[in-house]
Image (cartoon, rainbow, N blue to C red):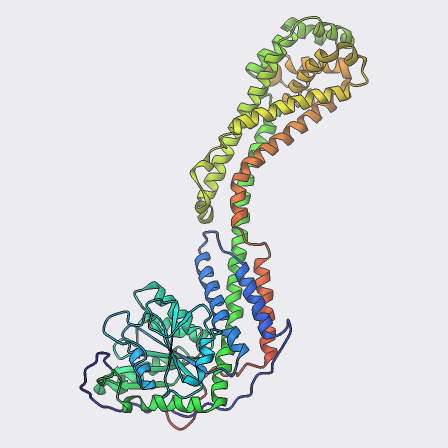
Length: 613
């Protein structure tokens, strides 16, 4: 079949007669109402699909988003409006490959040039729906394919639906000429798939030259999986190869479990001056559709069969969406754990630094030695520990001490440690995410390093901890004559000793390393504190100050980790999204069985008076 407007014609009859009997009668499904009704269950499923996101860059995400969009379209375009009006006209969507002659076939069947046909590709830019004038109101009101704007004029906008009436087309039947399924225009291909999913009956048009192409068969397999009613047209078949090609296509259909789909074979021919095929060429197909249009029970059977097939296909499709949603949650949890693991490691490093004496080295040790005296002073404290209370107080309060320098050294040492562990944690978290496809997609270069304001926040945190230690000393020593007698200086000096004790938190049991490195620092801190508070109080003070410091460190590092965690929090779907989809699909399946829609065999009902091969 050619699509140009040559006035010359070559007549011919179908190479193989088509089966033309109407479908068997079928009963209407019982109406259901309420939340347990099929429309109610479908509305709930649509809401669940719409509420589920797949933002993380996982292998399943793109296909899940595409599948979710397709399911939503089918619910809106077909399932919900069709369930609302089971008696609406039967919609035949005519689909096929580029240049298969779909538009010419539609024009020929309705005996009018309603859809543009030509040699330029793509020809059909916006879909064309043609129906009998008596059925126009159903399609005009927009319940079916509500996302397409109705128009009475041809349009280049693929989101418009050109409505045309044709008196030659019998009532109860409408044809929709869809864009090419293999169009070079992405929007056309997507629209073609969407329109096919809104069909009561798929009429696939292919040619003798292209019937084995991959794209049509991919869609045919999809149609079979959804239980859609299908009929085939093999167009432009050379007379000398008609039997061979038709037999081969029939074998291919049977191999794909589509052997019961009616097949109409049209010979290669010319079109007339109106661009229409000779009536003899399309007579068998036109008669088959006329019989279908004239029999309300036959149309109802087709609608029920396609509708039930589409409903049955929802459950496995939604299960795949639910699995993809679960993968999103699992991936988000895994990314979060990589971050938390990195910053837990940073916390452990700080905690270890309070145990192994590393914070007593360098500047802190020098300033502490200046503060409490000389090495001779340490030896005196160790030899006369039982009589130290008054002597230590007198020694501490009777001479000026560089407390500010010691406090600054403690602050500097802690801040340096915090900046180091924060840098290592950021690098570790960044590397962990970079190795994960979803994590890599969420990264930005700045996350590989600590926050710009970390040094300032760390300094502020240490100063707050130091003030907390002084307040702890005041509270613990509130009933001691020492505090009352020595006032603020003794509190400050004692607080510094508590800080030093926290830096060597091995329960005041100096190790060889501590003695060698700290030159008696730990024993000095122990002596000062025990002279003032007693042994148990010393342990309690140091333990409380250490717990407080670690809690503040955790808060600081948690804020750093949140730079990563907020990204997964924004991206992750609801924890129960997958379960919500499965519950919604289960309600649809239950309502489907209750509705009585199922027809059982999944084949297009046709008469028995002839073969279509």
